[in-house]
Length: 87
Image (cartoon, rainbow, N blue to C red):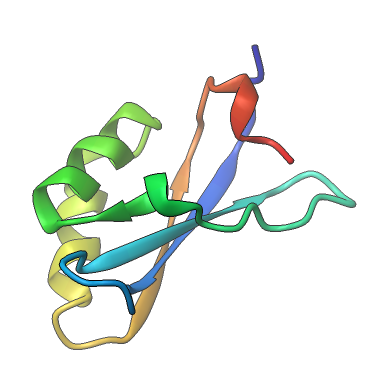
């Protein structure tokens, strides 16, 4: 299993009915962003649950969702323990 700090870049989804897409950006040198396959498309509630599962703090998730109402994208730090996410 992998346990490291990453950020998740959230942007609006071009695929409907999804509202957001997520891309992992790993903090270690040489890592590339993990592109968002279909599984990384979310409605607002699903995105919040996913980010919490990845280790994001609840207050930061709430701030991110509030900010996405007026901004086209945002980033949030997470500490996932999910080995299959790293490309």
